[in-house]
Image (cartoon, rainbow, N blue to C red; front, side, top):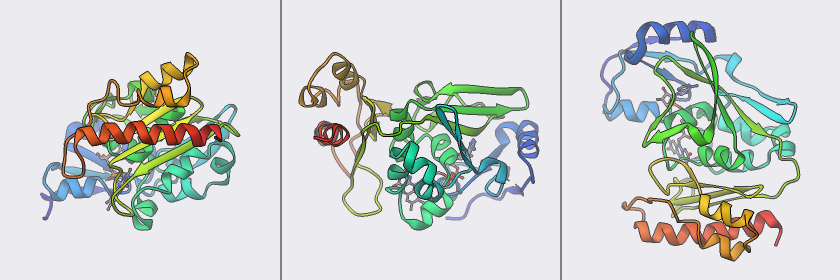
Amino acid sequence: MIPVGFDYARPDSLDGALALLAEHGEDATVLAGGHSLLPVMKLRLAAPELVIDIGKLAELQYVRLDGDEIAIGAGTRHRTLEASEELAAECPLLPAVARTVGDPQVRHRGTLGGSLAHADPASDLPAAVLALGGTVVLRSPRGERQVPITGFYTGVFSSVKEPDELIVEIRVPRTGGVGWAYEKFTRRANDWAIVGVAVVDGRVGLVNMGSTPLRASATEAALADGASIEEAAVLADQRTEPPNDLAATADYRRHLARVLTRRALSTAAGV
Ligand SMILES: Cc1cc2nc3c(=O)[nH]c(=O)nc-3n(C[C@H](O)[C@H](O)[C@H](O)COP(=O)(O)OP(=O)(O)OC[C@H]3O[C@@H](n4cnc5c(N)ncnc54)[C@H](O)[C@@H]3O)c2cc1C
């Protein structure tokens, strides 16, 4: 399908992008890697009057160690996450999850900020940032605010991000040698997850188990109370509302969530 006609702007600075977004509000959309936006525009589910291309802004592309945290520019590509030596040493869950996204073409274009902003409950990286207890940094001409990822998502494809705000940075803790794991269940290589489970430091992020990326809160609470891995993992589908679709029934997803959580917790614990 061919998208509805639109104007295109490629500002040469972040301030320029923010100014355009403030001027055009809900009539404008930003383009980062375009691997979620363009399919949506081609299906005519989105028809912005102005597309603001931020995909080449070097200001948004970095991975920096910053005290106890790692600051990652929103425009950082999945491939950069995969190859980052800083992340491999200080936050290995993130490159491992990035490596499971789509295929090399997708990973060379898609960005972490785009993946979080798109708010698809089937995406891998939001679940990883949830398991890490990360923070989303939003900026508009009105200023900057930091939103814990646990409070970022509000529903299917929606978040607390205002129309004039850009995600500029994602902050995650340095986890160093703490155990971690990512279990992604697909029918074919390169597919989206039917269910995915990210685990680090007793936190569990779930992919495709509800209308938003979410944490397995019952499992986390049980672990904190001293439950065994088996006892905690059987609670992984509590407080979730997995979809029924062509890939799997909700019941099958519940089963997968419990099994994958047990495997991920075992791997993270080294048992
Ligand atoms: C064939 C294919 C397979 C894929 N497989 C997977 C998979 O297995 N797992 C997975 O997780 N993902 C998968 N994806 C999605 C991929 O990871 C996307 O790249 C990602 O979801 C969106 O990132 P993007 O940079 O391309 O964003 P874009 O498509 O450019 O933008 C997506 C949305 O986010 C907004 N946006 C982008 N950046 C910002 C920002 N900095 N601030 C505010 N809003 C912003 C845009 O306005 C738009 O609404 C796949 C995509 C394709 C095409």
